[in-house]
Image (cartoon, rainbow, N blue to C red; front, side):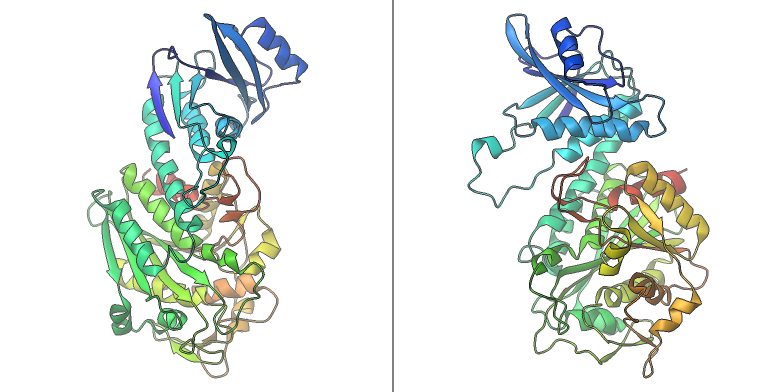
Amino acid sequence: MKISFSDSIPADARLVAHIVDKGKLPVRLESALAEGAGVARFKGRAGQTFEGFVEREGKLVRVALSGAGDPSSAERLHHCEKAGAALAAKYLVSGEEMIVLDLGESGLSAQETASVLLGLALRSWRYDIYRTKLKDEQKVSLVSATIVGAADGAQDAWATAQAVAEGVAFTRELVTEPANKIYPESFVERCQQRFEGTGAELTVLDEADMEKLGMGALLGVGQGSERPSRMLAIRWNGGNAGQAPTAFVGKGVTFDTGGISLKPPAGMEDMKWDMGGAGAVAGAMLALVKRKAKANVVGVVGLVENMPDGKAQRPGDVVTSMSGQTIEVINTDAEGRLVLCDALHWTQQTFKPCAIIDLATLTGAMIISLGHEHGGLFANDDELADKLLAAGKSTGDKLWRQPLSPAYDKLIDSPIADMKNVGPRFAGSITAAQFLQRYIEKGTPWAHLDIAGMVWADKPGHSWDKGATGFGVRVLDRYIADVVEN
C-alpha cells in the first residue's frame, strides 16, 4: 500500500477515517454519525470499527471510525496498530481505492501514528499472483492511504516502521510461495534481487563449498533432492567498525516430506513453510538494511529440500557435522536441527558473533505445548532471554521461555555416535533445543526460537490474513533497536 502525507483532505476523497480513543468522538463529526455510532454501540475499543455515510460539499462521503482504546494503556502502541489494521481488513476489497486518515483531532503522537500505519500496511498485504478467477468484489481495491493532520515527526517515525513492514512482507512472500517456486537456489536468487543496491553483503556457499567445510549434517538432509542445497549469509555493517556482529540463523527447509521417515499425506502441503525461520531471518535483515540500522548484524540461512529419493539418508545413518561431532540419524523427519547445527557452527567460525539467535519451525511438539499463541524461547543466557521476551511483548511476536538442563541433554546420547537427532516421545522441543546447544561455543550467548506454531495462520489475526504471518521479523528488529543500537 502506498502511504503519503498531505496538508489537506484530497478533493476526490470518498473514504475518510478517524482514529478514536475509547469514549471520545471527533468534535467535528456530524451529529448523524455521532448518533449512529452510539446506536451501534461503538465505544472506541481497540480494533472496533463503525462507518456511516454523510453528504459533504454536495458529495457522498464514507466516514469510518476505528478505535484505539484507552490512551493511557500500557498496550497503547499495540492498540493503535490494531486500529489501523482494522481499517485495512474492513476496506481492502471494499471497492475504495484510497483511504484518507484524518488525524487532526486524534491527538496521536508521531510513534502512535506510525503504529496505526504499520497496522494498516501489514493487514493490507495479500499475495494473489496465482489467483486468476477472483470476482471483482474479491479483488484488492484499496491501494493507497493519505494521512492528514499528523503530528510532527510522524513521517520520520513511519519511515522506520515502513522498513519493518517491508521486511515482514518479504518474509510472508517467501513463506507463501509454493515449493516449486521457492527452493534453495531460488530463495538465494530472490534475496539477491531484493538486497541489490542496499549495501548488504551476500555470501553463498554451494554444495561443493559445504562439502569442503565438512557440513555432513546439512548435506545429508538435502542429498535425496534434485534441488542442490545452499548456505546464504546476509551481512549488514551499520555499526562501529570491528564490532562483533549479532547473528541470526534460520532453518530453511524449503519443503519437508520427512524424507525416508515420510510424513502422512494429509496436510503435507503445509510443509512449504518449513523454511519460516529462514524467511524471518531474510525479512529481518531487509528491515534492518532498509532503515539503515546502526548495528553490525549477519543473517545466515541453511537451505535444503528434504525428499525421499533413493539417495536420501536413512534412519540409522551416522553423519559428521562441520564441528566434528557425529550424529546418529534416528528419524529423517527431525531434519531441521541437522541443518541448523552446521549453520550455527559455520556462523561462529566465520563471523565470531557476540550473540546468536536462531529461528526454526523445528518441532510439532512446540505446537502441542504453546499452540499458536507464542513461539518457544530457549536460551543459555538469562539476559538475552529477557531482552527477547521484552521485544516479543512490545511487538506482538510473543515468546514463552522453555527450560534447558543436563537431564534433558542426556536423552539424546547415542550408543554409537556422539548424539542422536531425536530423543524419546516426551519433551521433543526441549531435546531439539538441547541438540542445538551442543553446537554453541562456550561463552557465546545463544537463543533458539521454535516458531513452528507461529509462521502460518489458519484464521486472520489483527495484522495478518489467513496464511503467512511474517512472525519473527519484528522481534528481531526490535531486539536490535533496543539492545544493540542503544
